[in-house]
Image: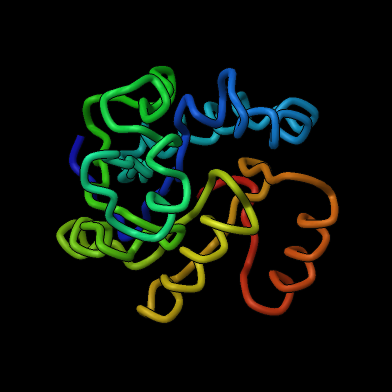
Length: 185
């Protein structure tokens, strides 16, 4: 279905590294499960898909052979590793119509990636953001989107972070800077 909207849902790092076994999963597991983030996100993408809105997946994929970006160097390429289960987008979250961002090397999804190009090619003016972690990748990308003059919204029902301290800290900042959205209209 053709996208006739200027809105897109951007899903950051809905990858197995966060949602399955491993260190990073353990860090967000409590919020992920207690807030039912995966099911809420699956529900959140259904209506935009039906209406033809663009769904964009924004994975972080680290090539251990070409460690580009500071995150890949400090983690020695052990997280979100290219060609491993760690970098795979969870299958129930993606379909053939979705766009996938390439080249990302940092918490800010615009840095070194083709996200801006995808948004411009599709005439996107407003993004709704879901993903992990709320106070890092999601927030840094929202800030960058605003600097680039995109409308930036956070679907907070579809995010998770390490603990309540970070969520509370983020909530305070978001009240000042970002508008929230529970469902995309």
